[in-house]
Image (cartoon, rainbow, N blue to C red; front, side):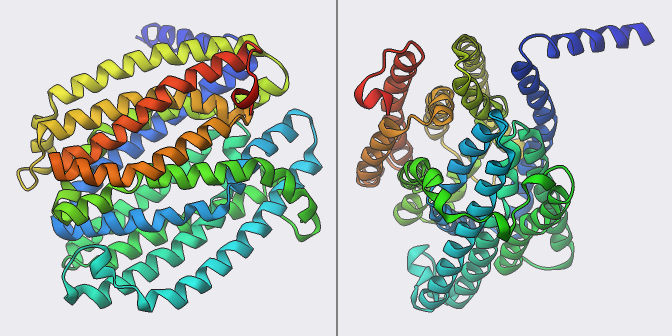
Length: 456
């Protein structure tokens, strides 16, 4: 009995420890992330029916739309988070630990200044915003939605700065630790929501408090722990704030900034368009279908996440063969995940019934369109990880801006023509463009054939 257990363990251990040290580190993080994110996926799936039954499908749709709008403000970091991710990895690869701390301290200082300004502006503007029109709901909810927006935005801003600790972990090629922090926040949320279902009637304010406050609490505890232990040498300090180094972060970060804006408009506007065209209930239908199939990109991102910083390190050290071998393996994994997505589509109607019951109806055509988008987007993710890691962002920027300009009018047009399916179809069509040019740019860069915009 002991031998039958020991042999597979020894085999898996030898498989993980085989290969380049960078590959070994990636495999360890992938395995740990699978365990952590697997639990996170389970928690997120349980949260959906639990939340719908705590409030109702319409209120849940309102919450989803509002949280999507608030998440847009993530681009106010002007790309400094992703700029820090690359620069921190580069500094570690070169053994420049003091420079790494300067980057960390300077980023914290800049983002804190930005977020204070944004908070002041929001406090001034929020009383004049008619959230009932923005969310296409009844006027009686005006005061409740204004309070909810304020709560969510304040805690989002706090999370905005606090989550830099997870950026450091990911840059240090330890994304499993970052995933564990997110899992703890989700776990705490589901515990509180469960308690609310037993002690209160459906209340959007309580729901907002729960989802907004829990990640902030977990991040505060995490920040204190890691900056006094593992990352003590990189802890932010007034002494190491050097604004002249902001340009190093900004040169790369500004490209990430505009890419973030473009892709927020491209991929995060669906909830609002659906709410305006078809009402909040249809937002719930769309999000349930998307959340079911999002298991694929969630799991795939577990595999991909360690490679961003790994590609940065390998590119700095000119280890191109390792990059080529890694991309080839990732493409093979993408094929496997695409087949799994198609299987999930075949059984989707039965899964929906088991998962949320008959309270929400989801058309098969909507599910099929979401699957198509997820497969195409997963393909793009492989090459965007490489391009982000090596800082070749200009084509991604132009593509994102082009998509952002035409996505909303195209989604509205197709939505009016084909219903909710048409809104998703718009995003699919634009994703196909990236699926074509991204591998071409990767091929040119890795084979030293990139010139002009292909090398920027």
